[in-house]
Image 1 (tube, rainbow, N blue to C red):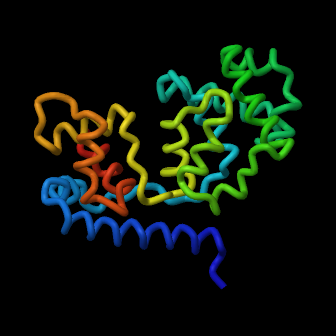
Image 2: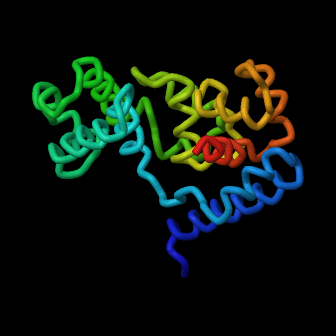
Length: 210
């Protein structure tokens, strides 16, 4: 029998390929980007939701290199990265790892919510996109954009449109051939032809900037 995690990865790959073909047919402008990107595909490795949220908090307002360094220090403070283990770390040790006081409070709020059951990460896979967003933004430090990234890259939801993402704004400006950055309404209207694969379309929009 195929391992469950591998089966899930295969399912995500199938959805991606189905979406890629549908987007090629639906939008000639995006099809040019898809053709240019070629065989490159996103990472479908399963991600632990708690670890993904910790990484997201640590990475806020930091360069990729600095975020990776500080995240590695935080991980080294725990035998396993879990809510109880994170709560067991003395806040000064987290500060010494390079986290701001605010980020320490955010991490502890996340860990406390997971530990006491207010945030049931295992149940998020069975909730709607908006229900997931509602649950995530209740945690200190998480806004709608962060919740949408969680939907796209941790839960692999196929139809998310993060109109607040600067890369998506710039990418859609280029694809739409606009002189000014498009408004949220313009982006939502243009992305209707991408439904129900807007997450997949956005992955190609990001690639268009490279």
